Image 1 (cartoon, one colour):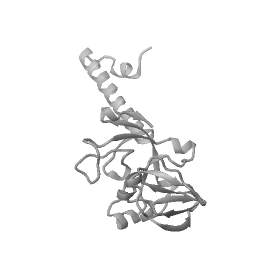
Image 2: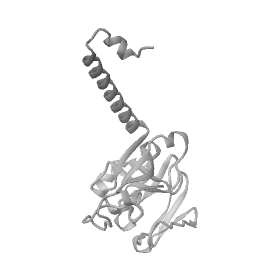
Image 3: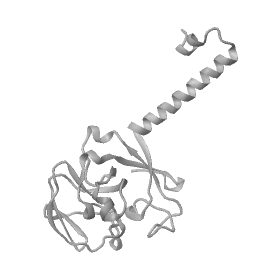
Image 4: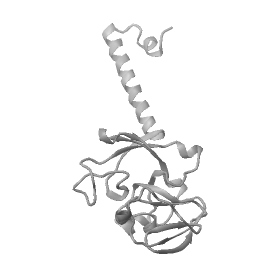
Length: 200
């Protein structure tokens, strides 16, 4: 049974048919890659030290620990079928206030710290959720910071996002909770540099 390309090119010289077949194959492969990138998995680079030491940025950037910035992959479909959990590292679009408060906006990578409807506060850099101290083993003591914030409630369908390097992270402490619709996907792997290759 002939494929559609063979049927459309019948009667053409053999070299032309081979060239058209290759062209259709290449265009099809590119379309598949672009579709996967747009809707399933997308790569991102870690440009700043806000997630050190979990995710590295490249020296000589301020407080960066590595020669090369980590490149990560984000699952863009997971949150269509499940809700974000505390501790997930997420790629998201910042609220508009991020530009005014931090001088930058757009696509950020941070960790989910407080979930919708929860009450949270900070004392000397320690996060408390619904009155209980939040265990955060991913934060080094020297990177915890000294923030103190009075208690507030997270709106329904929004998330408090923070970097693991609180001293260098411009996050929900500055520009507020992130709406659910701003979430792009969960970081599930580091694919570059090779010595950092890992699934999360």
